[in-house]
Structure formats: C-alpha cells, structure tokens
Length: 126
Image 1 (cartoon, helix red, strand yellow):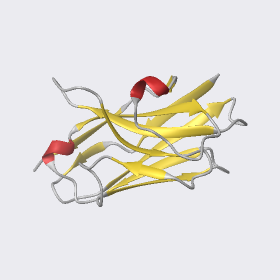
Image 2: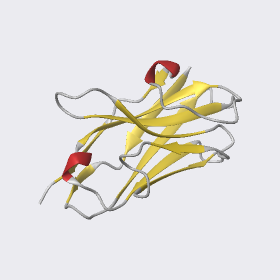
Image 3: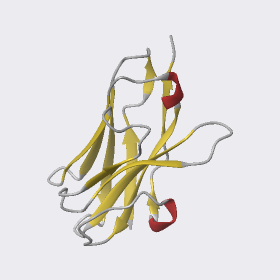
C-alpha cells in the first residue's frame, strides 16, 4: 500500500506563493504517476496538474498554467507543487493522488488514481 501526505498549505495574500509537498511512503519502489487535485466548497474536484513516473511529462489545467509548477524528487519520494501568483479563486483543499503506471504521459482524471492523501487547505485572501 502507498500512503500520501500533503503539506505546505496555509493562508497567503493574493499574488503570493506557496509550495505544496506530497510525501509518499509504504510501497514506493514501483512506478507512480502523481497528480494534484483541488476542491473548493460547493464545487467539483478539479485536476490541476500531474507528472509521470519518470518526471518527463507534466500537464496543467488552463486555470493554473503559467503559475503552478509540478516537480518530483524520486530519491525523496516527494512531489512538489510550486504555486505562484496565487488568486482568491485558488482557495481550496488540495489533494495529491497516485496511480501505479509506467505510462510516459499522465492524466488529470480523478478516477484513474487509487491512492489519495488527506488534503491540505490553501486559502488566498487579503
């Protein structure tokens, strides 16, 4: 079993930055694609970024493209989401998720992922 723990959320002013971390433990020797999702109150869960198991492929939702950057350090079993130029509409609970795959590309479709973290709150407000 793979366990995921998110950290790095918090309260930030509009225009500010945060870096989220997704630390994996348990059966980490496999190949896992990782994605970040977010869910705001009253809204559907939104896939915002993903990275392939090798790190060679990434994808971003239009809503975060150019502002967010996903990366991974496989030696540390950790995936990061650097979030810059944050907006109030970025306020949500952010979740990381994993799926065992050797695919060279990743997708941001939630039902493809079977391991989930508990989430971390990001609030963008002045």
